[in-house]
Length: 129
Image (cartoon, rainbow, N blue to C red; front, side, top):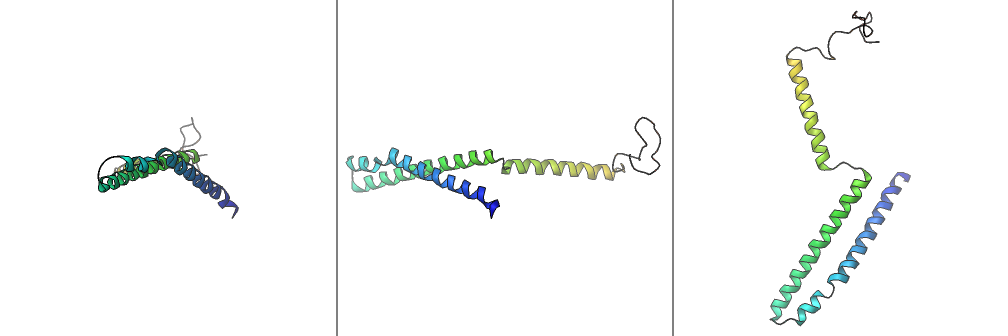
């Protein structure tokens, strides 16, 4: 259970961040629906205005949370999808190159085993020293 402790603290910090973000957004946009009620127009127009304002607040909150999660993941040093995709494509390119070299008959490991560097003699044991 000790290994889970850093993640629990991270989860608690994330929850505190979300609460702070929601409170801040409520402070910024909390009066929007009251102002919409004061505006002229039909009841349906006011309802639609409140729905639009709620939708905008929701989208803004989601983007703020996503941005913070990205920032926290970067600080933890976790790989992103893009990082993994990059490594995967490099690995596939290397595997393809190895297959190509093997099909041409190139020996694996760079050639015959050689003796100590600079002697130009074959290694008696068949492996590099």
